[in-house]
Image 1 (tube, rainbow, N blue to C red):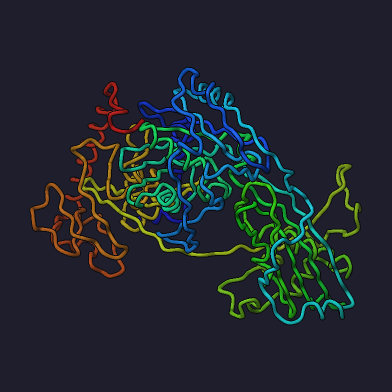
Image 2: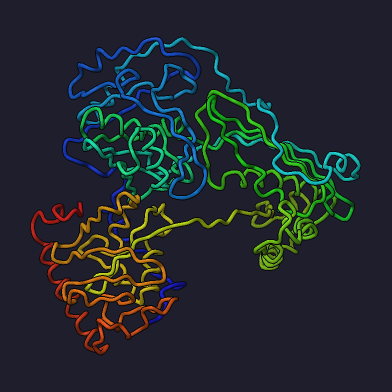
Amino acid sequence: MMSVIGKEQPRVDGPLKVSGKAMYTSDHHFPGMVYAVPVCSTIANGEIQTIDTSVAENMPGVRAIFQRRNIGKLFRAEVNHEFGADMSRLDERRPPLEDDVVRYSGQYVALAVADTFAQAMAAADAVKVTYREHKPNVDERLVPETSQKVESERGDAGKAFTEAGIQVDQTYDLPPETHNPIELHASVALWDGSTFTLYETSQGVVNHRNVLAQMLGVPKENVRVITKFLGSGFGGKLWPWTQSALAAAAARQLGRPVKLVVSRRMMFQSVGHRPRIQQRIRLSATRDGKLTSLRQDWVNHTSILDDYKENCGEATAHMYSVPNLRITSALARRNVGTPTPMRGPGAVPGLWATESAMDELALKLGMDPVELRLANEPRIDEGLKIPFSSRHLKECLSTGAERFGWSRRNPRVGSMKRDGLTLGWGMAGCSWQAFRFACAANVELRADGTARVSCATQDIGTGTYTILAQLAAEKLGLPLGWACRSTGSRLCSATRNCLRARSPVDRRRPRPWCLPSWRRRERRSIPCSHWLPMRTSNTPRGACTPGASPLPAALHSRTSCGCARFGRCPVWAAPRAAARSELRSRRSRATRSARTSWRSPGNRRSRGCA
């Protein structure tokens, strides 16, 4: 079979997205569901004196107006930054409605819940809050309010800069930026008396589960987080925000499903942003362009309670060869919502400043900016003093300059013209971290020759579903269509439950929603390199032995340990032609049955394909 890796393949989630049938978080609806709308503070610094809910509580359809005294206990989550199954990370640690202190404009101070969204909106508008207001600190000039932390240092950067003949000393300011993806942050919370099921706009379902379990005061096993599709996140949906805990707490209090969708206005206030950053960059070099020192001192604003650091020096220490280097960071507290990662957090704003300074240095030297960077190419990572696992910046710059025609560039400002327009040509270097983390997946092999992969992850729009289908098809020796088959107009049995982006808790309760009951098969976890015993309906009891696969011999996959060689299974010893004929017959029967079942009136929702 030809490999499906590295070849153009149709996106398995494409039909759902282009037909409008993809279920995003706020698309979910459940019987008896009510709608929640937060009441946001209108000041940025002060204390709540009174909250008058009398009018709102008597409006039509209103179920409750929650505030600090009646929302129920919410706890602060303990932070664990280690990537893995126990990771627990969030940027705004204060639970919503924890106290009567207002620390930023738009902070949630109450929650209106009603039968319809319009009723909830009207009730939220009717809640009257009085404050004792103080002058907020939103100064755009950043002065370190925490001690400067040395992020990296080698040599004596201060002395080398003072003694150098060529110097650049510039300060670069970056204003706050908000993510604002098309899909608004949203939470749909269900509570059955012991377990929470949370449909979330999350870029990390396992972390989300761990955090919410702590905030709600329940075991992790009692929280399920589901993200089927994400309408972009740009980093803003990496960690949980306060609307998630509010929706879950309201669902617990009311015993009903609760939907809370953050408004576009709130997206600028309560779900993070890239912070304001001020960076002072000092470079010195010899006349031939060799760097002698580099200093980067940055300050970013953070919220009153949380310490968010934008790691602007992430790439600086290893980007260029320089014997004297010092990188420091500091924070400045402001009455703003807590910042959060956004599109290349840390390295991108940091490189914007250092690369701008390198261009300033090239101008002072009268040197081509590409040549300046090539002249300072390091042989090793001078920050960690270890070899690079891979580094191809030199080849990238050289090849890019050649193909772009960089030699035709005139560095004099305004000198290049075309079609009556003034052209500007520029370049910059960049770097981004590459990490690998532990991961787990379940693979279900079915007697009809198809496979399903389940993993506690989510597709943020970058093709995870398709990649999982490709990996399964490649490793199992199946055609891509068998690793991901289409049933009606919905996604296949191979990735249907994978689409639910289920947490490890959810994996204990498999629900093959798109399959009629006669096609459901018992599920087994299959490690990377071994087949586990797996009995099917037409396999004699006890016939499966370790190393045997339930699939016909013609479809066996080679494994790294050699425990299930192609065509050597003691259970399925039939000739390949007979095995293929059997599979074709099964698939034909399954397809006819699925089509008949799909066309039955009202059957679509009964099979969970709503």
